[in-house]
Image 1 (cartoon, rainbow, N blue to C red):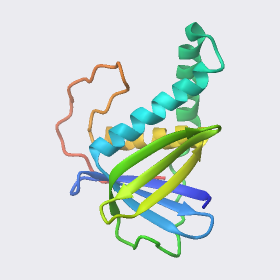
Image 2: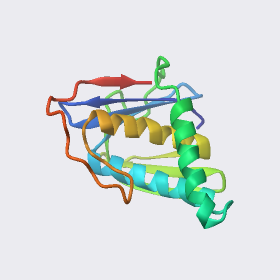
Image 3: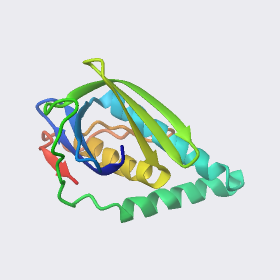
Length: 171
């Protein structure tokens, strides 16, 4: 299953992120991501990206290279393309709640197992660069949701705006 496109939006009424994944085969998967699942996915993604850089550079250089790489990916990631939905829905048209998350690195990226509340399991394999772009998307969505998920070692600031988040669509 080749990933064609990802789409996400924060849905305030659910206090969840709706993640849509379309494939090259015309399938579409829709997932609800909760704050804890999103936090684990972001943390694992960041850790694995940092480890990948650490294998190529000495420790004193790796952190700087990792930060530069993250900034470059954030600037280059397009989140405004229109989403092309799939024509078939293997898990149904309604989003399914992700309750289990398994993340495994492989040579050129990460493998993400999404275990759903209805017992299904979907495996998504992201090349290193795509995994970083997914991280940019999820980070933007959790920021819109005001979930205050911070990178490891970064203190969380108190929110300055107390108005409720609005439904946001990012592509």
